[in-house]
Length: 279
Image (cartoon, rainbow, N blue to C red):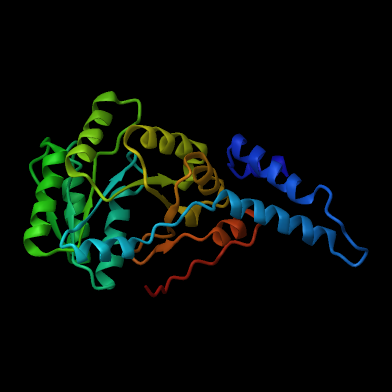
């Protein structure tokens, strides 16, 4: 069991926690001759995984509704390193929220990377939402602050703010993201991680959580990840809920996270992600 989990990219500390939970559930359990022992053990393993992923969920729509009642936009800042699909994920969430009837504006807070503003603009054009931007090299916090003021003036429900992808070891860029959070006071800070990077995603999530405090996680490229260990490891390592999974290239391919999806992937019965999704 330990080897299977480690090969599925589950972090060692998580494997040890799982094994302890399984032992606690099974040791001393009375089993009758008619019981299916294999099924009992499998259920114990699945229950242990569910317990590891038992963080309190965030109801994003409830957050938006409560803010609307007091006349303020919901501000969500996205953090993570380059290459995880952060900008595309922002567009997917904008698409999802717009289809639910919410008014959304994007903030081009990644002023550091060449082409990042244009990339976000192209996504926004396709999704049908507006982008607030400044010139490349501008203060990221100022861009997002302007987007929030625009949302207040235009009665827009949600601000989705991009930030520059950064390694946690880059002190200057991490200081910038701290400033963004300090100035804009977002309702949620969401870490976007690449499921294919396995335990690297866990390390990244920990570093960002220590720097700015993560509220939730979105994992991308889950459709290409045959193992699924990154989701289990992140959920345990930082104790924050996984909100969504990116399961394809289209804007529709962002699904709400469920522990059952992960259990099925780890035990070799992965969900066939539909190409026709209804939100």
